[in-house]
Length: 296
Image 1 (cartoon, rainbow, N blue to C red):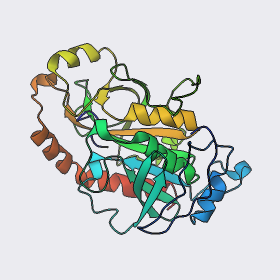
Image 2: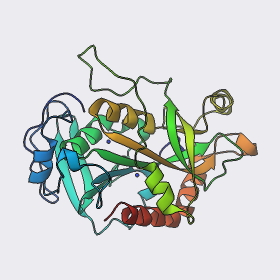
Image 3: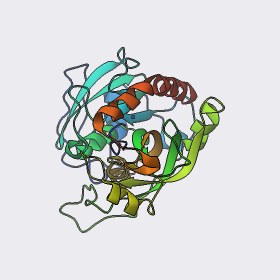
Image 4: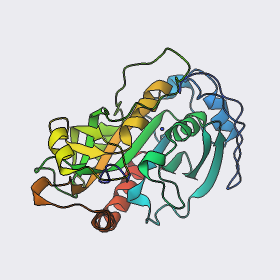
């Protein structure tokens, strides 16, 4: 992330019980496992007040039903303060998010005291999004640059990732089952086209996930520079779980800093937070434009 991914704006098996959702005090019946795309997320979403098109109509129509995930980038943002706050309970733990119309926003670090990257409950986050009937996820991560030609302030979209330091996040703890992971990016062409020329997004980058909460050492950065273009702490786990659940994961990332030692820089958390604050206005504008592009 910049803290390798501290920033940051996600089932597979089985079935979902009927989902009931009310503002602030919403509780869902616990879901034993995240629902499959063929289960009943549509009924769950409709009970929660969302409009869900029949499967044959769920192509590129507007307004689109999109779940946004972010993190460090929106910790200090007031852009979503008027959105309805909703709490969902899953068997993997509770999830709080903000809702407006057919869109929801989930802060992976939480809306209270921010959780460090290694403490994020990714399985609960993605299970809740899937249970509400979403198929498309747009994630915004804060990352550190591994390339001199990608300076702080640059927006990128990652199409692949490396996650070797820690095991992948999975719902298949008790099953000999899995799949080839990946990043769908089915909405990225539409988003990139709609954001231009005000925002330039550099696509096709490779995200390297490291374990937080500390930053990487300079020696670690020298090693992983041959692996990818940016470094973070969260996106790979989200993408893994989206693959298992059949969700379309779309990657956007804002470079908040050069990785430790790159271009002669020394990174520390105090400076990182300053860089995040400096980029807040651009992040707010980016989200406003994306909401318009995706029809809400």
